Image (tube, rainbow, N blue to C red; front, side):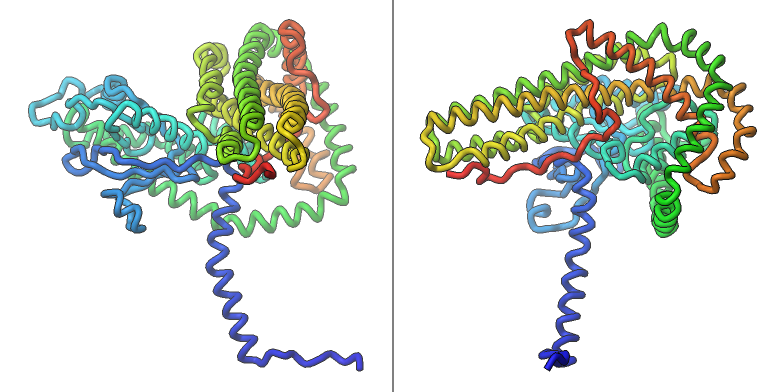
Length: 569
């Protein structure tokens, strides 16, 4: 009695089960890794259909079957059957960094600008088929460091659908790091900014769009592009647009090699990164109070030392433009979120109307499913996304004197917020509706309960919008002004940092650096000014952007889409 019973499985059976488990893990883990990555991205609807593509040597228009995957990756096949039978694609690309053009004239101007020195060298031998033949419904994907992709749709409706899908994929691929909740992602972006500052580059731009390897590739390509152009462009054969086309193919080869090297380097760094994070977790947690006290002491002394030059810079350079920048940022995000609120209210109203007409029919379930799909309905959300685009020119003019060239990232950020708030509100409505609707209610009772749910959802949306707007203004205000202020203080104030090194080194932690504390001091002063202007603008606009206690928190991940059977019948 009490002894451990012998296993009912013999050695052969245990080995067989172990083999089964190993097989399961071998087949499951690739899917799991993929879903871990996909969970960090908002969903994009898969889009597919026939197109023609300019490809081959010499380039000519050829029919293909194109597929935009749910993760934002574009693939093209020789024909539809090849795709359906699981065949190999002719080509594929991540859409990170691409710009979509639907005007052939505009694209030709861009192509001509790539090799302006050879514009006068057009000869009869240049292949007219390259792009001289008019294309009715073009879709040109242009990238600063990659081969251009030239497609054409059969109809205007198909072109419009592909335009929406491709724009969604470009944004999805581009903002993967910005949307990530992982501290490591923020650390990576900060490291890229510091690295570029040490190289003498102050000012935000769109180089941080994409994955970590894609960002590092873009950084190096920008550094090497002038030398690459000087060394290789004169030796390229052809003239005019043929030479420009050859130049993009050369850039694509260089980009692929750099990307492969960056990916390999980051993979090799992963074990060291994991070990470093584990070590920091063990050392920082017990001493966090002491670290924060020491950080506060050093910050106080630094603030005293740089107060004069910092205040002078802020009053002279930042204060005159800050109200206009804050006002434009506020109007950009406000207009986009107001469009979201309108769509959300209309969607809930349609559900209530359908419930009164047909409480348990197929049409109601279809309406529920359509409502749950709203955040990923590109045509529907385009109203909100266009609002984020409207201020691009005005805001770009205001921010450019401060070295900010990241307007694409800013617009993507506003569009991501619109999609995320819509997804959160839709999920909240469906969850609350699921809880309150039962089969014992008649149509009128159910509609009344849905009306109360509608009010709660809109109230929560208003609260969430205020918090999101404030974070948007603070975050992008810092992106515009912080690098500029750091560059202005670089010659003088940075010279005083070595005298604080002893205090920081005495703590004995990699988590504290003198440069980091220095930037935090400047960041804090900037945020005070941004907050003051934001509150002034909010009062002028009628109380928008209320201060929220969790204003420093990050946006939560997108809620998953609801299932078809959300309402109980």
